[in-house]
Length: 258
Length: 372
Image 1 (cartoon, chains in turn purple, brown):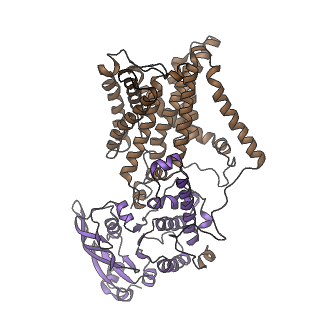
Image 2 (tube, rainbow over the protein chains, first blue to last red; image 1 turned 180 degrees about the vertical axis):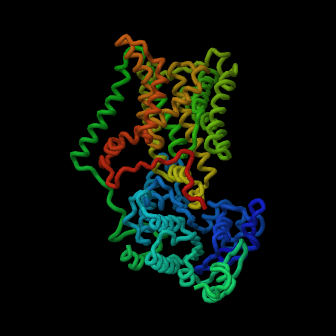
Image 3 (cartoon, rainbow over the protein chains, first blue to last red; image 1 turned 30 degrees about the horizontal axis):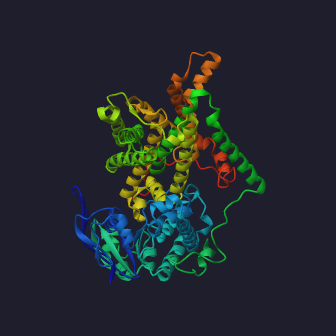
């Protein structure tokens, strides 16, 4: 069954049609890629799926439930976690604190128990901290736990952001340009980690990324957006050889993507 | 980093806490001498505060109670400015609402003093809820203007109503029979400061407070982590209003009369100065600033009397404005930045942060770290 699906999603801002009739199906445990030239509407599509934009027409489904009108935080609870194109973290918190806050919905105690420092609230916060540390450890970021964000490189921040989103315990992980700020070697490493994350956490993953070879290697299925419309979709090999896609990316006359 | 990654992952992070070779790093503890030194200094500070009420000369004990009230208001404003990144130029309105509510409860309804405080807290919370609903739609400078208008409206219209201010004569608010004296009442106010300090500390180290601070930095990121931005913003306003309401309730019984003229724009600005001078977001900084600014008038008066100066307590607003200007120019982080080593040391941490100093101040009104 499709974990995440978009049916005929269109959105316009004033006269600008940012997305037109986009149909996307993401099946369980798949890694799905979303590529396309700059301004093709990839991030807009993410925003429609995660509730930051409400589509002008069309519907969004999470695990079969229609969520088109739900707020972002309600969609997070239903299992969609995302990262942002520009790092989405809380600057004034340490790395560990960021992952702790991201687990907001997993905390069971109420406001009053928290304010009065009830033993169960304190105990739960302790578990929360340990779990946050565990997530960081899983991603190999444990040594950064007590660091402030100010001292970290852009690439590191993108990794910490992934840790934070994992903290929300998502079924679908939506990554917006996760390779930004990473070198070629680190990118390969990240690809490996993505595959392992899918296996270990039985995650479904949707990735936006410009790095085509990476996408062809990691993704099970790829959607190509161009000017807000789906230009092509298919297995990586088919996309690689698709003439339209190559032309959209590289210009007229190009035969294959990579 | 690569060899950590290469190891097979232990378990999904959704399971319970980790038990193994790796765990959260041990928290730093001061040496035994360090512990004793810190404990002694803290005990000394506590002793000074506790010894102060009977030591104050003559009728000036009430100044101490008033400063305690200001500290509570400053902590209340800090919830908005420091934690939530929302501004309020009308905090005098919450203080006044709490004050008149307590006065009405005591004098008109004949409720016991303690019940009147509960009423003050509830009324303060309700007033802030109204403002919070506006803040959901208006941001930054416009919100500042709305809060300003709100404060002026409360002062000029609401607190001027005949049945509220008793035709301008003021609403009496007697003290409880168990704290009739100035000294006893000062202790009541100091105890309230301790209570609010503790609650504020709990707020920042529990779920709701963390969520509120997260949405200060970026509402989008907070929402993407499952935090309901609307309800947490409102919660911040209500909590701030409740604390300010309590301050108002306490304030009512300091002079045992609540009068309309007290809750001016100038008073609201003084509270803002306290937050800025102390360093928004820093509990000890804001409290210290409130104490300094609260005593400023008294201090200038004493100075003028002792040295026969022309400048007395009435110049306090001028001095506090100058102080804030200097702070904004030279130490934008306020007392919290200036004394950060001291504050760290006193909270049983090393004097110097091993990671170096962090001068990145959270932007007021909320940055947009996670623009999608």
